[in-house]
Length: 216
Length: 216
DNA sequence: CTCCTTTGTGAATCTCTATTCACATTATAC
DNA sequence: GTATAATGTGAATAGAGATTCACAAAGGAG
View 1 (tube, rainbow over the protein chains, first blue to last red):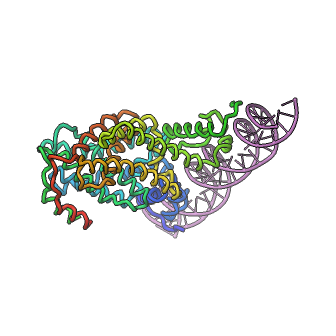
View 2 (view 1 turned 120 degrees about the vertical axis):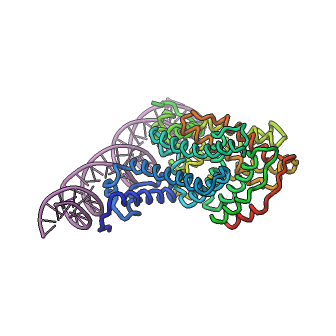
View 3 (view 1 turned 45 degrees about the horizontal axis):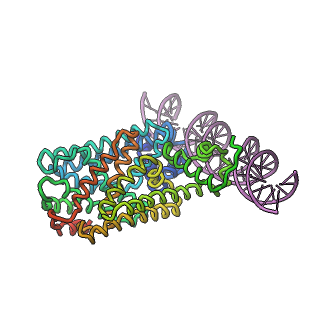
């Protein structure tokens, strides 16, 4: 099969990529070392040259996911100074990310990555907290700028933000891609952002937004 | 162990109850016949007297969940005629239901109940569609009564409704019950219901937005 | 009470998958 | 080039869990 030998760092990346891919199509239950190894072009036992065991692979996979999520946060930080616009862009990136890597929500929300493993559970919690922390940060900025009403805490807002995509993502998956996540998320964002805007009534959309959309 | 024999109907209920319980604490991965049987006070092989196999148990479990969810819908129908109030009550019931049966979201959203099993996937989809259909029905009524803005379809609204609890429920679980789902859901509902109400703050649609989205 | 169906049991089987290990092969340092 | 470490392989091991089966016991019908 694979005659050529590659550095363990390269293999580790390949393995994680493969694992995420397997999860995307077979779910966490279908994540077995045989499938992963085949996809990399190796034999199952070879995986142990690069990871301690299956648990190590899952841990690293969570790390990969974390870096992708936080990568999106960093990216939108560079794209705009307007916190509300940043959130909108983040939402859009988020949707794209999970559309392209259906395995991500499956790993994070599998509710069974852990199960007995409470350490893993804590790890997932930390990951979510970190991501939501950044989201809350944007809301906090927006409130300080007077853009968003202050009767809701940034933390609460961040959880609501998560709610804009999550159910849609699930429907998308369960419907085998039939459900239009993107559209639903956009609509939900529209309603939500209007609702939380400071002022008596919702303010009209900023023009910046239209521009930002196009470059995407 | 269990010397007494019970009718298969009784056992079926006990088994499903036990299965849901196991899922609640161990996740879908921890759902094995041994654990279920122990909880019922039987031996694993005895389960085959009441179900064809494990798959049959999971199927029936989905049925049980469906009946609980739809039971809540029926209940709120009797409690009020006001569709918006009904939704609020439904939300509350929903939160209570998943707080008391943490296994329910785990089964439905496990994203791995199926995996390869696409028939199961379709079954879950149907279940969600049915529940969301009722929710959408309430929104439709509310719109006809002039209570809710009509620029969003009932279907879209129903998905947003789902988003009010789901992320909170996940955080609640991952945080080992530390997160306050009830409070979060109440706040989210307040924001959401204000946002969709028909009335003074009827925000004009920005057509640019809809156009920009479509290109994506 | 006796027969027969239903339900429960324990051992055995079977499959799947993680993991280990002894050995082979490739890359790399010298 | 040779030595050495890193990487890959195939077979073997081990454990978990689903499923089957022959047998036992309970409960109802007659």
